[in-house]
Every structure is written in structure tokens, then in C-alpha cells.
Image (tube, rainbow, N blue to C red; front, side, top):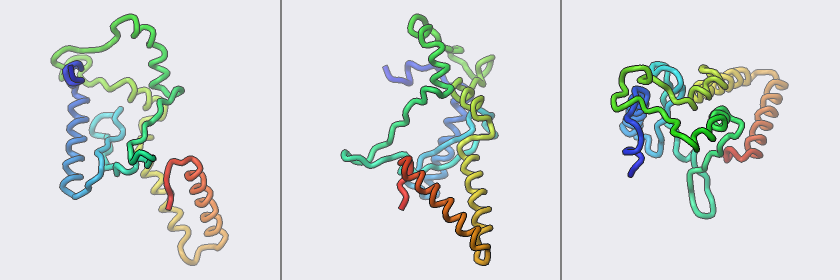
Length: 181
């Protein structure tokens, strides 16, 4: 039996998430952004606060001897999701610990529930620190640096900015997270 048959009916969250992903995918297709994947950030909050984007699929891939593949993300054993699972895994192996609010999940106490892993992530990092907002902060910092290092700026400032960015670039190369040209 397929996953779709074994799972419970969709909740309001599932419907809003699916609608958001479909809307992003449509915009990406219409605007000619081939090779992009729809992404939604800030899912622990209400849908009105979600941030939507397209992510180049190439950023998720790595090149191996066997070809290009999507790189797996290891489970963070000290992260909130695994820690929550560790607390209940014995109970899960011995009993039925699941929530299924029934065939109609668009009203009632669980209709607007958000996945526990999203809530745990938000509790650890805060609601303001979602992926796309973090990228916005990085861009704002680079914009400030770019404005400060215009022709005519102090030579010491330009050299310090260059050394700092070179160190950051070296760090990224060492971590292997990005291939820099």
C-alpha cells in the first residue's frame, strides 16, 4: 500500500503548504526558471508569514564518481527533533503513538496543528530566524560592506574587508559546503 493510503487525511497545514508549493512551482515554470525547486520557509508560523522562494536544484547536488546526486543531510543527533524522538522511541516501539484526528481534519482541535519538528526548530532558533530571512540578513550585511568599500574609501578598510572575506572563503572551502570558483 502506498504512502498516500497509509497516512491520515490532510490537515489545514498540509493544504496550505501544498498550495504554497504549487503556487511557487507555477511561478517558476511561467518565468522560465527550469532546474529550480519550490521552497517555503517559516512554516511554524501562520501561512500569511511564510516566505516562498525557488532554490536551484544544483545547490542540493554533489558530483561523485557515479554521477550527480542529491546529497543526503545527516540527522542532527543533538538537534531538537531527534532529542524529542529519543524521549518517546521506546513507547513508540511498544504501542501506537500517533495522532489521527479522523477523516475530517479541517475543523476541531487538531485542524491547525503544526508538525512537532517545526515547533521544536522554532523553539530552538526563534520564529524570526527562518532560512530566507537569514539570507536577507546576509545580503544586507554584504550591501553595507559594498557601500563602505567604494572607490575612495580608506585603503585600510578595503584591505581589512578583503582579508576578512578571503578568510570566510577559505573557511567555506575547508568545510566543503560550497564549490567556489
